[in-house]
Length: 257
Ligand SMILES: [Zn+2]
Image (tube, rainbow, N blue to C red; front, side):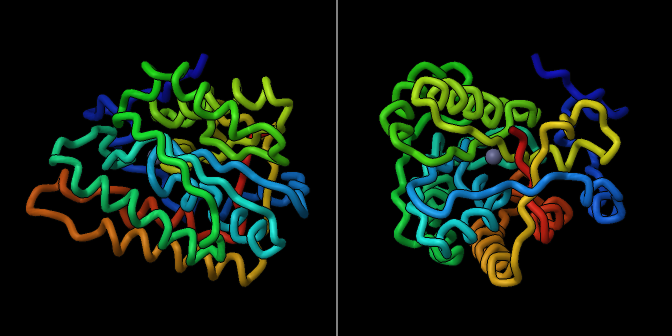
């Protein structure tokens, strides 16, 4: 059971409240205490994303490292949703922007050096992953067979779609006896370094070499360029906001075992 963050005054949804400044995270002295994750050197890795680009934000540098090693990558995009992590709401706009994000997935992967990755789109409607978990598990099951590793959204990320996609990936990887590591995306926004809800004892870090970090920055730039042409209303700013993007441009990525 995920414990929900306490709402900040005036904000019913913690994802809408002002987030933790990246300066707090950069100043944290806990980074050095996290063990390094040993990444596979061959085989196939399945990266599950609840929304297009989750995998770039949460694990893009890790994917760049894997791609550079020649590891095959399968990206499973559970929804095509146009979704703002900070708004916590899906928008009904005919789905055009969502399709743009999903179509742009290939561009982001190319920036990561993973342009040849297989992309599987499950097209579950945004915000509905939790209601269709069984369907997602069934779709993931055959993809997990023989995989060397699965990277999936963290089941405590306080985003319904992230958590449900993570649970589905956990179930499918258990059946296939594949290791599943979960990457946070929204956590960097709502948590602080000393937040007791963050399971630091199971955290592993991936220190990104310069090349992987540069690739991730290019991929993030690509996705913010793609989704960063907002309409007249605040809610038209799709995807993560600049302050949130800063969390995803660090030299270290974190996954929970
Ligand atoms: Zn997401």
